[in-house]
Image 1 (cartoon, one colour):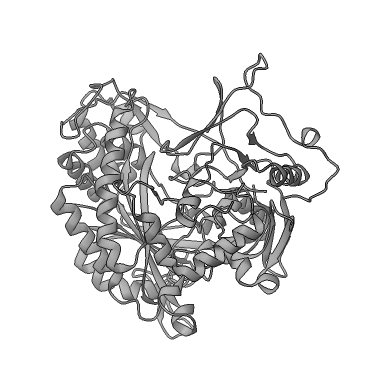
Image 2 (cartoon, rainbow, N blue to C red):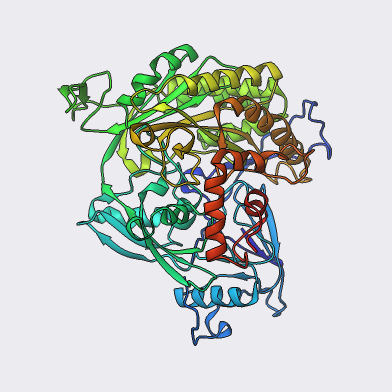
Length: 610
């Protein structure tokens, strides 16, 4: 969200499948103790909505002046310039940008002039996308540029199976444009409101042991650099490793203006949801990783339950149940769901939600039946969590237990287009910390991903951390982008193991109350402190021996050695090694010699490029 003075302008669209209803609660104590069992009675629902933004392009020596080319950013109606406040989607980070230092060019020409002027003056122009990153990676109070206006779909090429777009186009826009052509993107990162520039620049990922992170879909890109190089078009063939650095470049090598992505034929996926015990989840994982195109585990802390969600093309289903048996090209038995088979859960929607509704009625008796009936799963979970002390493990256990019962009743099959099934409900505002680590190869996945989860859960539960469900676990193939958390550089330099290296991604969360339920902000402060100082510290301690690397959109760093994040920057440099760090910094010096694209996080990790 962007606020100009008293007027609010939305920068990011709240993900369409993640719109949550936050109950309106009466105010509690102004300074609730994290150990106190604070109760909050549910009353009404307040839906939050939002919009979007992204990346950029230019030519040095343009005869278009900055004043002629740049749109104005208005303040209040009286014409006074106001500070622009930009807030990320979760409300976990914000930045105030001085008047005239936030820009939204309307054409690529305007962007090129803006970047050229920044090179001349040394004025910061950090690119910001949809501001969805929980860590505010794109924020710089000294100056920012958003590309929500540069969102054209330039070309859809069925011969090369690619789509070329301006970097400000949202993933959802690209999907909409591809649909009439019978095409879609190879994978999604759970939501579709990222702008393409940010989608690839931070290494977004979906799930699937044979599918790499989304930066690997890029076949060509154009960056606008604040350097003598100006606008640079890159492919693997023309620039090699520099291309791979730029496609996952964290906004530090140039502003992405155009991106060409691989596409695949549109298809429907059959989604299977089942609940396993933790021991069953361990035993069945190797088979599931090979058998299913997409798979994710959702571990429920304090419960012996793992929700497993798999997705497979409808014409090649390795699922139990009625259908036509067939063999695939590798001789593995599969089942094809036939037209007469109705893949529905044996429980109605109301019966599935009953455990959550019963608990909410118990915790907040004043909630009326009409309000309850209008709330879906995500709404109920958000309200349940906020109805008590969100740092009380006993309260969290009750909600997790009800969620487990919901998932038991929700087991079954469903069929929908892939773009629908690869997006899922990510809950309300939250702190997220997600790490990635190597776990063998596609053919030999090993046990590291389950070892890590079992050790993490033991530590969480023995420490009494108020860990809400789920702890989500996904898998991808490796990425050749040097700065990808799924880069196989630690595993091997080349060959089969590098090409087929398997990585696991694990994300922990703590949900945050809305402003309505936390008018003083004190609850959010306590939750933030607990999440950073306890939960994230525990994940790093457990993950150290597994070689974890944090997702770039979730990493937090600090120069203070006493801070919980004090050693993170050093760990990141060690993870990628001196060769990759030096290569990235050399590229920064070449394409951003004055450091106008950088931000505090990049400078803390890689050093200043100025």
